[in-house]
Image 1 (cartoon, helix red, strand yellow):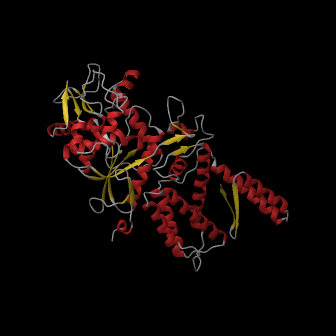
Image 2 (cartoon, one colour):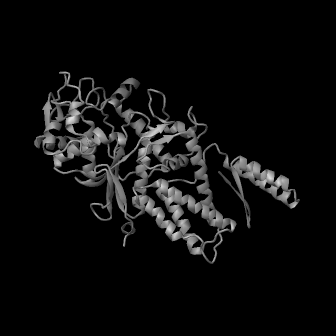
Image 3 (cartoon, one colour):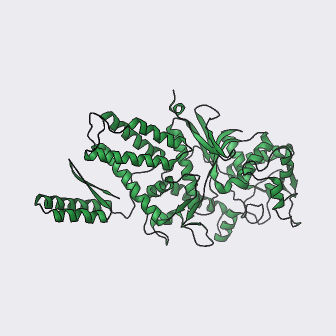
Length: 493
């Protein structure tokens, strides 16, 4: 029996608003699509959080033995500034301001995106298609929507007819918005728009003479609408109906809502069985915003070159911090939170290092098999990484007790514990055994070892006051000494 058949995953499905048992369309195979970045600037830290969450989902599904096709796109055609079919193309605007070609903008920030994700130890997706590489597919998709009566052409642009669509389907099914409410809350058109209704959205826009990025189509030289590319690429590589579609909470409406409408209008079926949305990342209790200055990018966080945090943090510390909150919860990035996560991360790494030093006993005082299944139960419950981490800390406590001789584990249980700790810490959570760049680990270890030697000499000379002082002073600095039958070790808390 394949290992994934022994586990019962439940996923919170935004479409139904509840957790559902995960049943892939084809047993043993999972198709997953996640909306990628628009590459006109350095990747936003909030986006990194979203991609990190789905990297963990990808890792866990692979760990269970599923064959996963993970598709994450690159938006390199650039959508309009306010995502409402008006304004200036974001990539074109950046190119104009810097007086370079749009594809230079795309190349620069695609490289930055990949470099940042590599730094955080992301697995690459199975396929990473680009919007510009799939113009033909998008044009064919528009043709089918027009042929089915759900789009109209005006002055070389093509618009999706939301009102016509809503006669046969339900526009707003994902975001739980009713078209009547959208109509009530929408301003009337100003008379200059080509749309029939304010709720309609562009499938193809005719390019103005100054617009650099343009392609020929049956309707005009122009460019595709923002929502169209994801429908075209997800269905091309995953089929008209696939398992999981992920993205940030901010994409639920209108982007993902429009994706559903486009698929139903062209294929007469809903494209996705499980919609997953990662929540927002805040900074010091407030939404990140360039306009208010309450923002920090990944490079600044990693280097410590910012005004929000007291030090630089290692990529795995940031990744560990992210995993300590559910992907569906708002996560508040603070210096205190990162400092606490750094201590917890080191505590976990110290325990994993101790696994190679444990001596086997005749019996086990800790039920490793039961604990192992609890780890799987946590991840099976909508990828509940905070609960998983709590179980990893419980194992760390047991490891330390075995090391000090207050608990015992058999050789078989030590091996199973080691395998499971490595599987969940490194393979599933994607952590690496690393410390922050400014910690000076080698120097710290040398200094602490010297103090341990001086303490041992003090104890040998029955100078217990000095021995206790060394121990207490180190503890005050966050360095915990552990006396065992094989000598004294230390950990950084």
